Length: 308
Image (tube, rainbow, N blue to C red):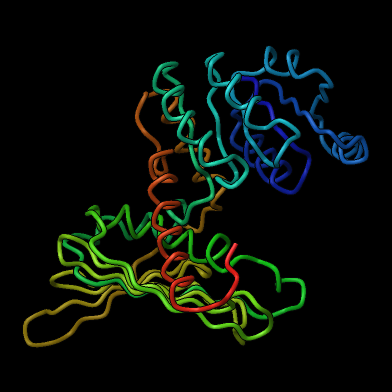
């Protein structure tokens, strides 16, 4: 398959390296509005630059969206209509309305559109799946160490969003109630958010996100009816505790330390071959955005913090 990249950035390099190591591509092409970025990529990688969008789309079978483009929405829509499969490095590179359109277009064209920006491709999470069922409570902490360069990241879009997505897919029940609190520490936007999602099946998820922490931490505890699963997304470690006879057993479960880009691409190309849905679908993105917006509305109703 010929693969095309929108953008010439770190995502492009990461996916190109993974693709070549996996032997997935015949030829690779890219389109990029900045000639400076384009020249820098060409110097390091044997990827063919295209200055014509039409020529670019005709040359490829698969489109990987690595950055926002001057007319990304139109280009991605056109690619799907032409039967190209699409991997989105981030769901925020296209608008909410276009995501809804893409869902319809992809169904009509029989193409795969996958969200790669998902913790569901973390090796620890993938290993945890067989041990997760009948979930009754989830506790998640996603904390980022403070630095001035991180002062403008969105606590919801950059931090909380990823956890909302995998939580929704794990619980698989409608949200009955959302409550949320936020705290501003360094500016007039939320730096800390705690959200509680209550589901129709009785499960409760407690999610905490912060960009003013002393340390970087991405951990989750998933309480089943008979065990607790502990996931460390950063170190890709997995543990489980469960009752055995009169004792509480603790088990460390081996995790394949595969990079997320490889897991994403394995799922993507497997779905292209089989016609199955990927781990993270367009509907997952839409559901997550709806829940994230509901969290923001709860925060706005309780505080005067500006939330974009």
